[in-house]
Amino acid sequence: MVALVFILGFILLIYFFTYRIKNGYAPILRPIRAFEVLKGLTGRAIESGRTLHLSLGVGGIADETTADSLAGLAVLNYLAEQASVTGVSPTVSMANPMVMLYAQNTLQVAHANDPESAKEASRQIRWIAPQPIAYAAGVMNMLAIDEPEANVMVGSFGDEYLLMGEVAARREVAHIGGSSNPNTLPFIYASAEETLLGEEIYAAEAYLRKRSSHIASLLAQDTMRWLIALIILGNIIIVSIRN
Amino acid sequence: MKIGRVTATVVAFVTGFLVLLDMAAQQSWGDIFGISGLLVRWATIITTFAVLLGFVNVMTVHVSRLRSRKPCTIYSAVLLISMLGTLLLGIGGPTSTNSQFIFNFILQPLEATFSALLALFIATAAFRAFRIHDLESFFFVLFALIVLLGQLPLGIYLWSELPMFKDWILTVPTMAGIRGILLGVALGTIASGLRILLGIDRPYTD
Image (cartoon, rainbow over the protein chains, first blue to last red):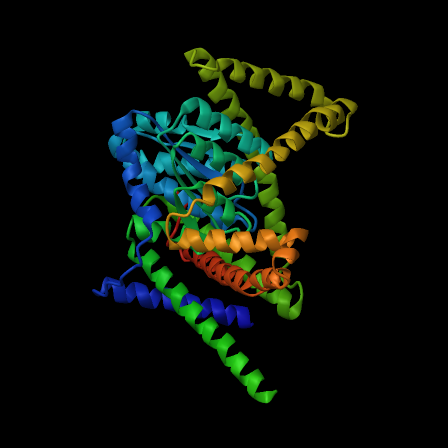
């Protein structure tokens, strides 16, 4: 019951902040450098004549890694929209075939007005292998052979992240990495130029596309975080006084 | 608005809320609806079909690579031959002798070998990460060195309190950081789920 009340409160907060933003409230989002760099990657790819590689990770779409996979798909959504204008489609790799279907759908939606370019963009989607290590081997090979201009890795990753990240770092490819798994974060910090740590990966739509409902969702998250922090602090004080 | 888009949104909304209610009900009153397990089983079946589409994707990508005569096409040829070979040998099912041979004597040793590379890669990544270029990287190196020396028997000879300090770093500031990250991730995950339930995000529509 507590969980339902919590979720209901969350929903109300999202609608409340969406209403406020649509009525002129302009919240200041703290700058996240990785998103700023991401915005310029398509331009860099056009200038260099090379591709972009986006890894959606080893997560699925019907398990506990769904949110991470959706975060990667949000980045793809942004890059696909840019691709529909510029014609530079990113090469997208993933380990889960369901995520592949979502990625194909994202590219087709972005290229809805041009079926030929939609077909071309869909050819850039690569399902590599379901096992994380085999997937990493495939991505390492792609980074070595295709020599992309930039490597973006946003999704669910485990230790295999380092295998791919190190290849990108050694080849001096512009590299943005993001994951919500605390065990993977040190690997991202060590190998990526720009990092999206923890919950930052879920903010892609709010930062890249500035949609009011997504910014409202961030504000709702912040409010909930403060609420939880205050409850924790309050409990600590009460327990300390009792003892 | 397209009828397909409306149908997909309604199906996502109804299924999402049913699973959510089922999960909440399981905590308080036990398995009432029993629907979340059923839907997860359906998702598993759909995933199986998605693997077939993934197979087609791999074939298409590597056949077109072979046709284009790009550099390193030999790898694509090896991949296609291995894939079709495994398919033929594995016709007897995953428990057949041939399948077991492929998994136990080819796939597993290859994966183990690849995993072993991680040790080397951790060393090279650490070497790069240990370059101090700002205050953040200074603290990164400082704490990493303390933990590293605290783990070694040599550390206690340098400073007798070092192992205790290392334990404090791991159990207090590191744990606090991890809990902070996990709290943020949990809230981010809930927000992502709710955006889909409310129809704000619709990754499933055309």
